Image 1 (cartoon, rainbow, N blue to C red):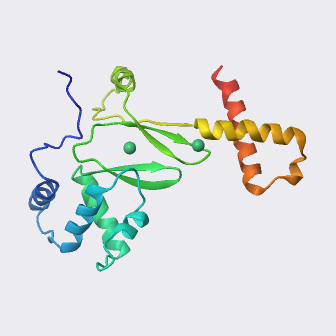
Image 2 (spheres, rainbow, N blue to C red):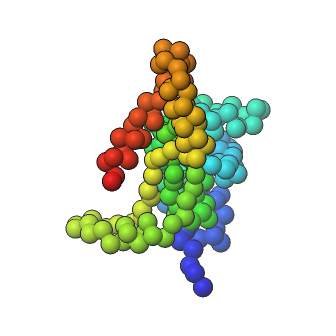
Length: 190
Ligand SMILES: [Zn+2]
Ligand SMILES: [Zn+2]
């Protein structure tokens, strides 16, 4: 049977129990209702979200300050209940409870993020020698262009051939630059 690699949490313990245990070990941490409500919200969320997006997910009857949100998210990262990523120039959070370690494809055109499970990445990482450094886990971000953006770029290329650059919108110019970077990168990887 194939063993599923998890983030180190025992599935027998609930997220609440994990948080309780962590706070007991740390000592002196208050069990505030805010922390448990944030925990409930992030355990149900799908995908990758910023602290501001999580703030907007909170029940409208419940006021949570930005400072409380940031400190609670960082607490939940320490408990291994959340993954913290730095993607697309922002810090994004993802539920880590009972989730296997995974990797990400990030489209630089539309900023969409895909979760990827690929054992070959972990196998490659396991072969990397790290003297005087103990490896714990490996998380990879592969930046590129998704197929929708590739099709958009191809259409734009045709449009560019027909029209002058001056007639393009700002968004189109941004995409054209990505297209140029992509062909430069392709040269690089040859
Ligand atoms: Zn895209
Ligand atoms: Zn993910």
